[in-house]
Each structure stands twice: as C-alpha cells, then as structure tokens.
Image 1: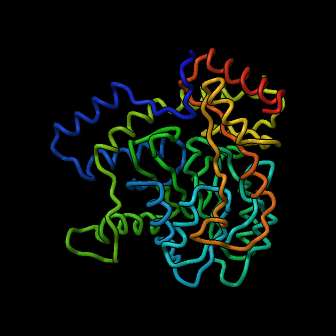
Image 2: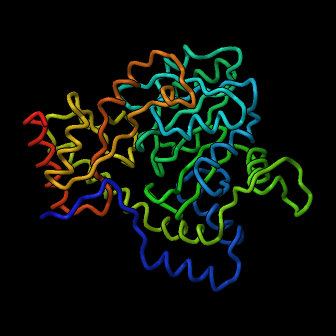
Image 3: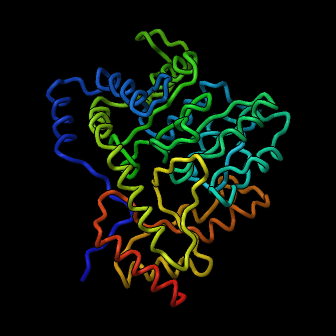
Length: 362
C-alpha cells in the first residue's frame, strides 16, 4: 500500500524549534524584538522596499489594512468572488460592501474588464487576489484605479515571492497582505504580514493591531488586539531562510507536472509573471469531484478544491450576480500536490494517477 500523498504539508525543522525555545527562555513572549526583526527581514527578503507590520493572521492583516486606508460604511471595494471568504469578510467587517467581479479564466485572478464594469460613485478601492501564487494583472487594474481615483489593496495571502514584470506582489498597492498560516509557502505557525505603501498606513496598522496605542495607555484610535507574538515571529524568521529553496522546488514540481499530465488543463502562466505555486490548480472539464475521489481512494493522492462555493453564493452574502468564469472555475478547479516535500516517486504517481483516471473518464 502506498503512503498517502497529502495536498499540503507544513515544513518545521530543528531551526524553528530552537528559535521558539530561544524566545521561551527569554521570557519575552508577546510582541517584541523578534516581531520587529521579522518585519524588517520580511520586507528586505522579498524586495518590497516598504515597511511591513506583523499581525496575528492574514485576515487581520486585510481588516487592519482596510481600516488604515479609511474604508468604512458606505464604501464599496471590488473583490473577486473566486477566493477564500476572508477577502470579502474583511471588507464587510469594516462596514463597507464587497462588490464581486468576475475572474480572468487565463489567470484565476480579477478580470480588468469585469472590474471596470463594477465601478460606481461609491467605489473606493479594488482588491485583487494573487490566487494560487499567480500575480493578478496589476498594470491593467492600476489604469482603472488611476482613471477613477481608486486605491488598490493586494491580497497576496498565497503569493510570497511572486512577481510581475520584476515587481514583487505586495509592492503595488496602498497595502498588501501575506498570510503566514501553516499551509502557506512559508509560515510563522499562524500570522500575517502587511506591506504598507506609506508611513501613514504603517502607523495606522500598528495602532489598530495594538488596542489603538503606540504609547501604553495613550489610545489614539479604537483598536484591536491583533498582535503577533515573538514566538510566531521567531518561527517566521527561520522560515525566511528556507522559503526561496522551497519556492524553487515548487516551481520544479509544477514544471514536471505540466510537462507530463494529459487530459486536464494545467495552470496558466502570464507573460512576465513569476508563479510561486501555492497551489498547482488544474481544470477538469468533466466530473472534477469524481476524479478527486478516485485519486484519493485508488492512488492515495490527496487534492483540494479551492473554491467550490464562490463568495457571492455564500449565505453570508447571497448576491444574485452573473459571474460565468467564476462559476466555471468553481466547478472545474482541482489542486494537486506541489509542495516541496514531494519525492520524484510521488510526482510520478500523481502523473500516473491523473493520466489514467482522465483517460478512463474517472
């Protein structure tokens, strides 16, 4: 019996364990010097050339970034529906309205023409998601934003190290957010990082994450407790030393899969884009769910469906809107294992399984 190949696998080594132990011995567990160092190192490592603020989750990062940018009741923010619910939830949590636009079938990211059609007098911003680790069409979205006086916010939760025409994601918008959840391309155990386009945004995110205060007991805004601990930051600092190697392995694994899979549509790659393959997402035209079940039961190959229920269909939003590219992607997309722990044997079994099942009509 073959061992099960999981769709994702966090990588935690002795270095991370030693870093945690170092913090525990220090006695300083809450936000402190490890967090400050992690913020600086994260920005430098990914070439963001802007300050970063660490928070306790990716969702917190989006929420605080929106608050820092002044988004609130009466505002609209254009978002994709084909994404994790946190994208739209973070907008709704500010009291603003997420307006769902369709995706480009060639990238799974926001389609600029669909975004243009959603702009109203209440629109304040566009929030693309660099889905699966592939950058959205930022130049086209920026042209729309410039034409209407809008801000751009980046949901880069899955895209650490991705870039477009040499510019890293997280360096385009008013702010960008990276998730540090355990299954992301790098982790801090749990957490998020906000890249801030201006010093004002940085100051306000720092205030909102810490009960509204920079100086203790001198609260300047109504804030939250969204701080990252030094324990989590210490893990993240060690992961920064490894993430480039992991990314190269993901890209090599993706290249192998794309060169050898048959009967399915491999992930797209736009000109000038660096894809970091948080997910390797294929399209399955017929019976995606059946293929996933057969992969698991017959070949012990895990997979994931991201995302079978688009945000606009969730009962929390229930928006009656025609988003054909989104609906099709929700029916057809299946993410295969691409993580850096895969062996050559694992890759060969994934290819054998998908090709056999696709040919048989699984």
